[in-house]
Length: 72
Image (cartoon, rainbow, N blue to C red):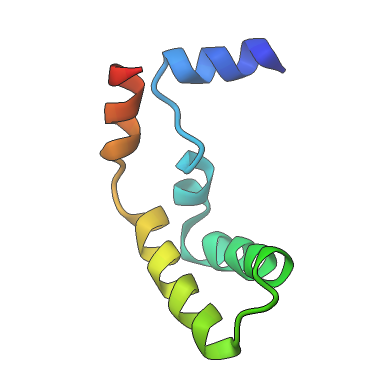
C-alpha cells in the first residue's frame, strides 16, 4: 500500500484524480455519501451548498494539487 501511494505521489497522481475520472455521477454519489456521514448535522440547504461547492472543485482541472506535489 505504501509503495503504491509513493508511486502515485512521484508520478503526479492526486487524491481527486479518481473523482475526476468518475465524472459528474460518481462525484455526486461520493459527495452524498460523504456529506451524510461526516456532516450529518448540516441542514439540507447547507448540504446542497457544500455539495455544489465541492462538486465544482473536484471536477475542475487540477492545479493546486500539482503545485503541492512540486513544493513538497
